[in-house]
Length: 152
Image (cartoon, rainbow, N blue to C red; front, side):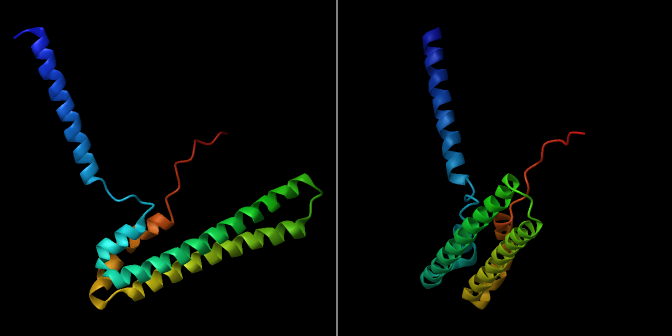
């Protein structure tokens, strides 16, 4: 076998192998964690009516969370802007309390959202919802990234 023929066969083999691997990865990839709605609809088995109602709940929840995230960011900037001026412990405390209230409200809204989604389930779907709830919680409360080592 000549070198040219061997190299041609090797290149064709490697191209086909790469295409096969890419196809396999594309077909078997898990759903993206930022799209928990796909998991809910698929794993719980919502019908079209349930799915439409779920999308309305999802959109309302997203809007509320965005509103609260904006409010949290604005309040956090106000809090750190206090470093520019004369210390004001009462204003610092007030802003810290407001940050805490916003986080509390986000947790309550998300809890209520999950309760509403669960209420969409038929009795035969509740177990499926309960099974995926830990994964949904991981999406909402992602694990902390590994922190860099502490300096002493």
